[in-house]
Amino acid sequence: MNILLTGASGQVGYELRRSLQGLGNVVAPARSGLDLSDLAQLRSVVRELKPGLIVNAAAYTAVERAESEPALALWVNGEAPGVLAAEARALGAAIVHYSTDYVFDGRQQAPYREEDTPAPLNAYGRSKLAGEQAVAASGAAHLILRTSWVYGLRGHNFLCTMLERARQGHALRVVADQFSAPTWSRTLAELTAQLLVRAQAPGWWQAHSGIYHLSCGGQTSWHGFAQAIMAEAGIGCEVQAIGSAEYPSPVRRPGNSTLCCDKLRTLGLVIPPWHEALQLCMQDRAIVEYN
Ligand SMILES: NC(=O)C1=CN([C@@H]2O[C@H](COP(=O)(O)OP(=O)(O)OC[C@H]3O[C@@H](n4cnc5c(N)ncnc54)[C@H](OP(=O)(O)O)[C@@H]3O)[C@@H](O)[C@H]2O)C=CC1
Ligand SMILES: Cc1cn([C@H]2C[C@H](O)[C@@H](COP(=O)(O)OP(=O)(O)O[C@H]3O[C@@H](C)C(=O)[C@@H](O)[C@H]3O)O2)c(=O)[nH]c1=O
Ligand SMILES: [Mg+2]
Image (cartoon, rainbow, N blue to C red; front, side, top):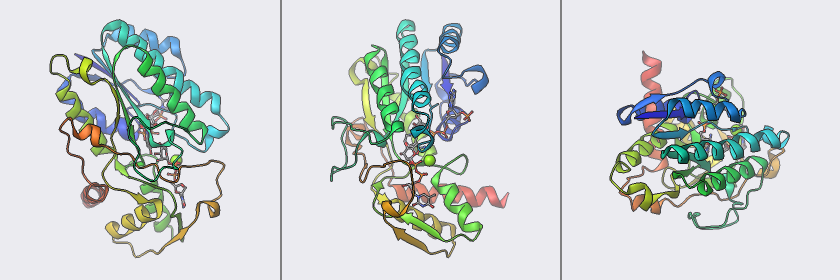
């Protein structure tokens, strides 16, 4: 079976490329060969390859820039996933699509469940919600995996930003009033692959297509996450806690967007706590630096 993987140069796509290996022949075109803003190209690539599975890890993820480019964000995150899903449906293939905790407004105290009503606060969140709705409406066998605060040792993410700022000797000032769960890109890719192994059972997609929350376990603030990063890296850098109002940003972000992953646990997946995943990631960093 061919597996079409989009966004393989991104944080999650990079890990998926490895995690999906045992499941089929992973074809991961570069953006030049598969641009999500070119819907005609998307259709022709899928029709040529005839994948049994599409894993869409590509997205417009620049949250602040999306405020000034909402149409492009909506095209890439909202329209293109619908086209991929329609093509999957026509082929009898399945599609895995990623979404975000930013579809919620963050006003709820308890962790969000799949059936809670989304109400995005920003253009990125609105574009991702449109993508979810397009995939769900396509009639294709699908998994929409909502995750949160993805980080890893490569690419553009909060962990790399904090380590780089500390290395440059900057004082760290980080918001302490936004809560969710940091999720290691590798954890997300490996759990996706475990889910897809289960999905090989006959009738699985008919029974289980839908939205699932898939983040690491527990919750913290961005400030708590930054403190844990410094501690795990052995950097004695103080992290000052600030309020969202003190962090100049064109974008509104949810206060509590923690995702409840119990629905996924009922499928037998074991989800590591965020701090455990961070430790594994930082062990990996030590190995990378030693070599
Ligand atoms: N990062 C996070 O904190 C979170 C991410 N998510 C979701 O998880 C998924 C994966 O995100 P993540 O790996 O972090 O994202 P990255 O920003 O690390 O990677 C995005 C990928 O999408 C590609 N891409 C962007 N625009 C296009 C386009 N027009 N055509 C083709 N490819 C494009 C990028 O290519 P290039 O390298 O060329 O730019 C890159 O490969 C996304 O759906 C995202 O919304 C959900 C919650 C949190
Ligand atoms: C760099 C920095 C950020 N912050 C704040 C801004 C923000 O509230 C928070 C995290 O910063 P980021 O730039 O990573 O925020 P952001 O890009 O909004 O992160 C989001 O990305 C998208 C793709 C998602 O789907 C979300 O789950 C989430 O990970 O920390 C500080 O307080 N101090 C700092 O020095
Ligand atoms: Mg960002």
